[in-house]
Image (cartoon, rainbow over the protein chains, first blue to last red):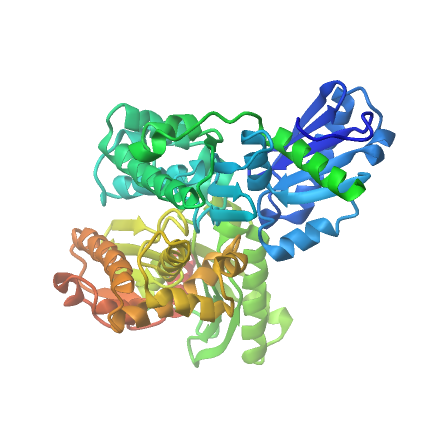
Length: 300
Length: 300
């Protein structure tokens, strides 16, 4: 951690909130990570109250894990990386929150993920988990691509792969699309026998429910299923396009993170796949680094 | 109306509930339609409480329009055609509702639309409004195709056309897809200037919000916009496939209904387009005919 702090006893909390989970990590400059907590989704686009609740829950769990007390929360300097706060209205609403911390510094989950992946240095990242998006930060420039959320964008993400597969399964069961092992795998996944059973399990559900089908798509593609291969290739094509757009900023490092980063890598165009370097630290560590950077800037 | 009733003073109410609106029509065998009411969406897949609320509201409005009193509601024989009740669990939940009517007969909105379109006779219908689906009833056989709801199925529907257009606009604004006049039309529709503005207006919104973009797609296709033409053709291809599947039951009549039926007709494959005949009555009249058929069967 490359930030010099005047007060070495100051504790930091890094919070990484997205469409599936909210992770909180408490960090002591002297002792390193001293506690972690995980709660449910914290995506302001899908509800502010749930976002605040998940932040509180993950914080409480991390506090307990670190053997701190509730009263210690107000001494923490928090760095929050949240999905959706690239929308100015949401950024403002979260920033106006009567938060329980000593200080709260807010940015996008992409920014903190990027800071973490490159250990505080400049670089580019693509996240492919429940959603998908790309971010690069080089000098004074930053670039955000994709990340418009489920059912609008997020091609190549877990939710998108799952939605494409479910859509195909329903077309297949109705006799409008070619056979694929995905149809049987999705029926088995929900333990149902027909299209209505699939609809009952997916209608009105959030992106994370769809994302649970993604591993079936990846697995079927790896087993040579033509429909699954077509879906995965289309998603990977978009991820490759996104990467090339980030490369226009000439980042020194590029990492892929999220649950689908590893399985998708082999499907990327080779000019992109060759450039992928391991992420050096998790997004929640990026959130801590961000909190430290902002805190030392504002205190200094 | 071809049903003989022993009691000519019995009043009926036909209720047609879907993803955008709920329409109630009160019918007197002696005087014909005596009152109508329209309320918000009534799709049980997207919420039971809202469905019951919309049924109540549209009923109250129709009661007032017919110069009846609240006390008269319990004398009405109701026919309900509701989206989503092809799902057995939802059919059961709605059927268990402590409804305010003398009798309530429940079926799908497709069934009542089909009964209406062919004035109580056998036939086939495709509905393309907010959603899309097909239904045929011939003798003892009935066939339901598509209609799996927004973000899973409903290709060719208003919501699907709108979603495809919004997805393209975001890809276009991000530099990942070709230009189309749709991008500027959608920005103007929401009075915003960038991708974030579109996302803010669509994220988490219901199918009816997406369906409002459909006329922009149809209009752009008619003006020769290549992207819009591709979207409309893909939707119309699915509608044509659905029609040919319904034709396997050899229905005597086939009608297209819903807000997109007319604009989509010219894009259908010619073998399908040629068979389209006008709907003879509205779905809510179909719901009344259904109520009369069921009532005379159960009373007889």
